[in-house]
Image 1 (cartoon, each protein chain N blue to C red):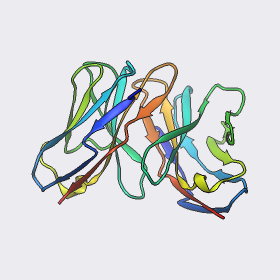
Image 2 (tube, each protein chain N blue to C red; image 1 turned 45 degrees about the vertical axis):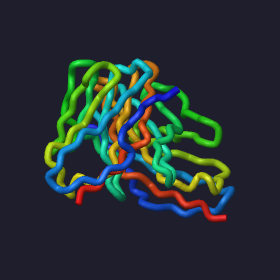
Image 3 (cartoon, chains in turn purple, cyan; image 1 turned 180 degrees about the vertical axis):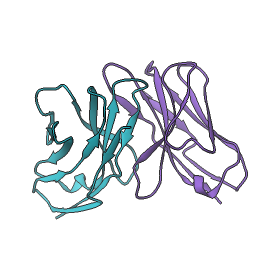
Image 4 (cartoon, rainbow over the protein chains, first blue to last red; image 1 turned 120 degrees about the horizontal axis):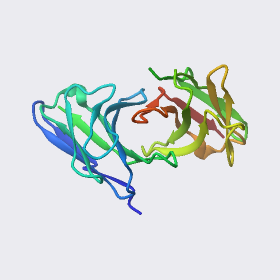
Length: 112
Length: 115
C-alpha cells in the first residue's frame, strides 16, 4: 500500500528557479491538500482540492500554484522560488467518510 | 474561521508518568472533528486519535485518550504510562465538516520523555 507518494524528498533551489512538487495517492480519495511546515510552527495549508477539477487557496497561497491533474495527482509549483519558501512540504489526501487523512513523507526544500 | 491553539511549546515528563497536552479550538460550525498527530524526529505525520463533535464519549486508542470538553472548546490529549518512544512533536488539528473539510493545525507541543 503506497498511500500518498511525494517526489522529490529533498531539493535545493537557487532563488528565482522554478520547480514542481509531485504528489500521488492510490486510495481513491476525493480531496487532496498541500501544507508547508516551518520550524517551530504547525502545518499551514497552501492549497487544497476538494475534488477532481477544483482547487482553492488555503492560508498561505502566495508564490504557489497547483494543478489537480486527475483524481490521483495533485502538484504544487513554485514559479520563482524565494528563500522564504524554504520549508518542509507535505501532501495529504482524505475521504469524506471515514474521516481520515493520509500524509506523504514530505519534501524538504531549501532555497538559497 | 476555524482556529487551533496549543499553548505548551514544550513539555518534559518522566518515563511511566501520564501527560496531558492541551488544545483549545474555535469554530462556528456545529459539526467538526478533532485530531491528534504525532511527528517524531523522522518527520512523518502519524495519526493518533479522532473525536467527532457529536460523539457522546471521549475517544480512546490504547494509551491515548482525548479529554473532550465541548463547552470549553478543549480537546486535550492524555498519554498514559509514557514511554521514551513518545518523545516527539504533537499536533492538534480540527476539520470543519462543511465545505472542503480542510484540516487546520495548532502550533504543536514538543514532548520529551526523560528516563
